[in-house]
Image: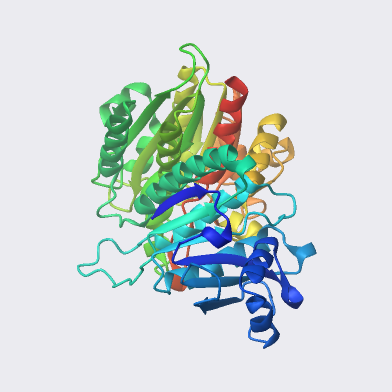
Length: 497
């Protein structure tokens, strides 16, 4: 799909389809009014027939409109003007793109960016158009022997803006395409089955990404982790024949000595739960337990494409969590890299075990901030559903930055408390800490566990268990939270330019 920014009047537009908006009660948007004038009131007469009233998400495709050089005019319902918020805008865009993809139009010119969306600017509208269009084009079943036939004629989308807005629109488009590329990479990796996407595969993909953009990539093997004393990570890896990997990709876009942002992505390429075996139903979805790792690689692709002036290190601890004769057992005690001993009360609480050693290790980079991204707790799905990512942090300004970035990207997070009151739930009679804190506040106590290993730096935790993938008929990776992380880093890089 090719996207471009244009400043062309509707009467001179020769795309296969012009797209314009209609509000409820058949009110024409500004661009629709111009088209109506050029067609001698044709749009007004069509709407008067009752075929469309402008309700949010409705569409009406018109052919051979008098006085219009384009073959088609697509009317898109925007709903009530005073209720054109982000959700209504996304609904309208989704319907618009669906109608375009099912039509025979090879190109389309969107005259939709003159409509004020509550609390949003033109750049947001452009970014959402690109992301929704690319998501609809994304093919999840790339391993099928025969791809499902998709008859899509649409090849070009022209985003029409005013002459004064063209420079800002070009910047927004460049940014949107880079975020879409990163989200697509995260989706591709997330959708791969566990027998393909192993820790070794993740390491190879990280190495390829580094080579493509001239980055540095280090991959630590089991013997390296043994020397470092990563007893928690290695304990999880014991049940699998797949060798664990600790991957670090270095993006150096800022000043040489500037402290980096470190992103740590959980990379459990398949999670059967270990000895604390998960139920069989929907266990196939545990291939998505490396979505944190996928989002780190996707974000690195985005920032490398944009050449952001910032230093970032992407760290991925990766292994499988399977049951066999060598696997850790409930009641076992392991020693983490930090020296803290951990009583394993549930082997299915493995993500925090691999993350705690990675979070200890990243202190060597003298980070500005550290953010870990993990499909960590089912409790987060219960608390926040599939709409919001869980956010916990030991630093208020960092949490505020992430929340703001999520709002900008409409890839939202919600902050939960990280009070010391919850720490006692992790008490153990036999070790320094237990790896679970019981059913109450499961997302919070998981973050409390991680906080024990992050006291030397500013840190935030993103629990993406509810947002990383969809189940059911639309099963597949969402690519979240690549947009959130991308905006966070773009904002930070902007302050350093």
